[in-house]
Image (cartoon, rainbow, N blue to C red; front, side, top):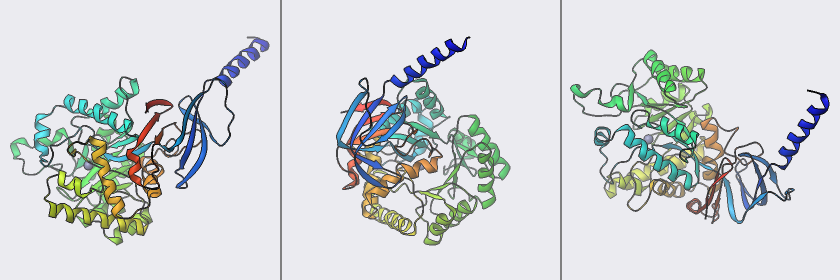
Length: 416
Ligand SMILES: [Zn+2]
């Protein structure tokens, strides 16, 4: 090729690039998730799925598509760090055994497709699917989204839950001890834990989820075995703890990235989490959620009070937090995401500022999920995962229920 032709080709290519059609979003109000502040009258230029530029008075080309959101509150796509898209249990009748026996992996996957779309349509452009998805049902949902067969959020995926013998089951007779293999990997020693981590990665996991304290307690070395093994492949470990204070300390000292639930955490542990940089994904069930799970009013009041108190203490101490819901029982008349968002009652009862709640759903969540250089803020070179709300979420966090626009990687998913 002669130099002249080369230069001409380069010119053609660069000219095409220059005129590539951009989408320009005019944001009346714009959430700067890095600083937790709402800015006014910003413009976002989107090109090829990513943010090209953000600022005021940017230059617009004639061919650009303009999306006028000057009356809306524009935010980075929201993230939920604890979901089970393929699972569902009947209202006030939470018997997981029946779901495991009666529902096949394919049925679970079909439900997962529906719920994943609900998340996306309601402004959650990234979710962490944390296990209990039969035989790796979500791995295929992720493939389907990547192939463009279906629309869904970015999914950070745990595969099967790694737990001491028995998973989270109770009272299964020995003839049926493999019953829980459908949902859990038994792992009782550091070597078994490492093997389980590798098995999950083989099947598509991008995060490792463990459970401790339900059927046996992992010690610090057990947690560390998972953390070290996962780290080799660039993955993080997150651990469910519940009703057992000893396990939680082991989890923090073992180097896990997050504690899921942690309803029992005391101030010393919350402080230790702060020092170690361990996230709390609090799955902060409100009264309505506990009641939907079958508790009577008195018990639901006690439990929601306990969760509110733990949330308040974690915020005061300064433990890092990422938003997570964990709801698998839909409240009557509400879909999954609407049921999830009942947890906002707890955040409000704990008097957590709205701007901080939004950060737990965006920049903090992205950091925990290891995608902080790609998503969670609206800045140059980040993916264009952008949503808009009708109402101001700083005035009242309930405004995140007023989603009227969703863009996923530059593609408009919803515009009311
Ligand atoms: Zn869960």
